[in-house]
Amino acid sequence: MCVNKISLNLNPAFSVLLKMTGVQQEGDDQSVSLHLLKQKMADFAKERNWDQFHSPRNLLLAMVGEVGELSEIFQWKGEVPKGLPDWKEDEKVHLGEELSDVLLYLVRLSDICGIDLGKAALRKVELNAIKYRASKNYGTNDDSTAEMCG
Image 1 (cartoon, rainbow, N blue to C red):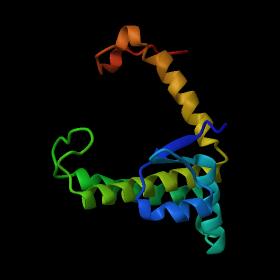
Image 2: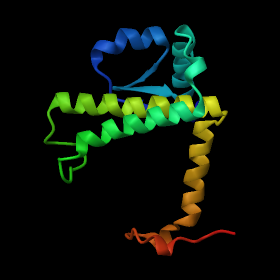
Image 3: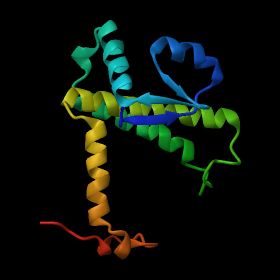
């Protein structure tokens, strides 16, 4: 069982490609492991001889640029309700592309740094559960209620 899975809503036109690349399909969503993304990004870089450019610094700066592009999508929208009900389909597709760019750079950066991103993320969730106990932080975003350790 792979614990490092994310769910992506993809265009149905990609179903053949997904089957060819080994993506597991679960219902209407396709479940993609971080391991698969890591391997795809490593293969992509190797096929283009880009490993020489994929230093931690370069990948981080590229990811920051992508976060900037992601930010531009929301820049003049004001507050946006969950699910983006007022957005056009092409806006949602563009958002998915920019989110994917950030994710892919993050996965590649973690791989180059030798960090198991799935394990690190699960550990961080556990640490946050301790730091922001529900009994003290329920319904508040006041960081002063956080329990500082050591």
